[in-house]
Each structure stands twice: as C-alpha cells, then as structure tokens.
Image (cartoon, rainbow, N blue to C red):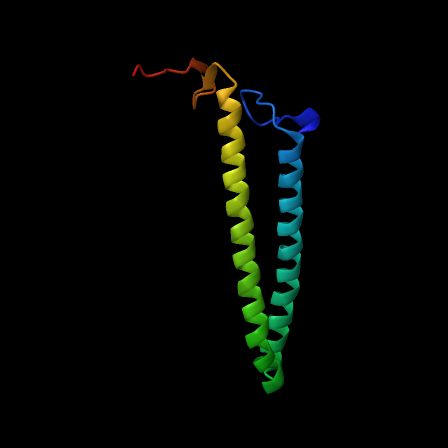
Amino acid sequence: MEGGTFSGVGNGAQVDNKILQSFQKSFVQVQSILDQNRLLINEINQNHESKVPDNLSRNVGLIRELNNNIRRVVDLYSDLSSSFTKSMESSEGDSAGTLRSDGKAGQKRTRAG
C-alpha cells in the first residue's frame, strides 16, 4: 500500500491518501473493539464458571456491551465496504480498461444511447 496505491488491485488504481487514512482509522477502531470484546468474553466466561449469583447477574450487562460492540464492528465494516466500493468506482472512471475475473485486461463497453 505504499505510495498511495493498493498493491492488491490489479489495475494499479491510484487511491487518495485521505481514503487510505480513513481506512486505517476504521481498521484501528475495529481492532480496538475486537480487543475489548476478547476481554469481555474472558470475563463473561469466568463469571459463568464461578456460578456466583452476583457474577452471573453482571454477565447480563457484559453481554449487552458485547452485543453493542459487535453492532459497532458491523457498522464500521459496512462503512469500509461502501467507501472501498466508491473509491474503486471512481478510480475505474479514470481508466479506459477493466480487469476481468481471469486477471486479463479488457476494454469497457459503452452503450449508445
């Protein structure tokens, strides 16, 4: 991803650094939430194994927090997907050719009319 391009994109589409920074920020947010979820799951498991009534009651709130975190991750990935799609569509507009699924270059067809 050096130099403002995605190395995995076959057509070498140039991607704006602002978009890359946005992706990076979103991935950092996702990783942070996933790390927090790992800690929540560990605590939930310990509370469950302890079978202490207060600990089991605490799990209700922890599970709600976990569910909310999962929703946030889904939303972040949805936003990332939309942003990526938009950035690829805009970069395709700058290119005269397309890349077929077999990796070979093809020409865009324009419809008359």
